[in-house]
Amino acid sequence: MITLYQTPVAWGMPNLSPFCFKLESYLRMAGLPYTAKLAQLPHAPKGKVPYVEIDGQLMGDSQFIIEYLKRKHGDTLDAKLTPEQLAIGHTVRRMLEECTYWYIIYMRWVDDAGWRAYMPVVETMIPDVLGGPVPLPMLRQKMLQILHDQGTGRHSMEEVQVLAKEDITAVATLMGNKPFLLGEAPSSFDAVVYSFMVSIIANPVDTELKQYTLSQENLVRYCARFKSRFFANWKPPETRAA
Ligand SMILES: N[C@@H](CCC(=O)N[C@@H](CS)C(=O)NCC(=O)O)C(=O)O
Image (cartoon, rainbow, N blue to C red; front, side, top):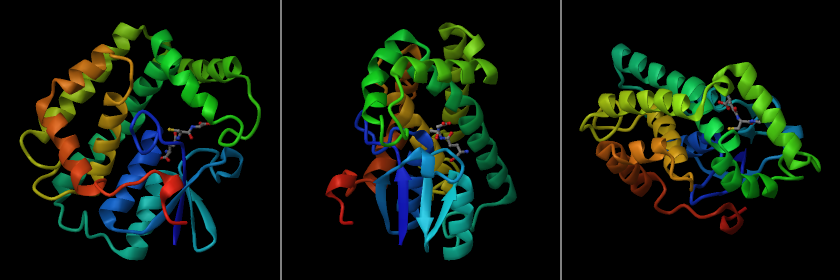
């Protein structure tokens, strides 16, 4: 059995963190049974979420976990992809995880309207997920410092939205009218695309980026298609069988 340790359900998403949401999406796509539990960061092997417990072993990093599961259970999702499709999938994944991710974080922590909407959700993670009674202003300050050091925090909201919209345009263009990123069949890369698109769209603040993403009709249709195929019978963790 796989136990998935993750962030809470929020804003109508099964998971607040795009990386936890990606891993939960993959588990559902691959048909691997799991139990979802709230994470406790001090127990996370890499100090980040998601992490899993499989056969008594804790393991961190969504992609390392997916690669492990592919080796253990086989890889029906990606087995038929060509080298070119794998390269496209890899490039899109890296862009979303290493660039777009920071823009999503910026909208939640730096933008004042974003922070007002996000603060109550962060509050629900104190102390359990975050591992102690940390004052909210201190948490925000820490994230602002991380964003500054990473680089995105040095940009204005307008600049960040320009950069993020370029990423959305790239995904929408590559998707075209295909049902899934790489063709007729879903691949593991769709777990990333879906979770990151929904993480942008579900933000209650009506940012220019959210509006832009919603204006990409193929992406909106894609998210609906993915949800009805892989999350139709999803239930919040509290009501799932242990
Ligand atoms: N490469 C990691 C990234 C995970 C990640 O950045 N998780 C964030 C939440 S979305 C986190 O745990 N942040 C807490 C921290 O950095 O202290 C993965 O794929 O799992």
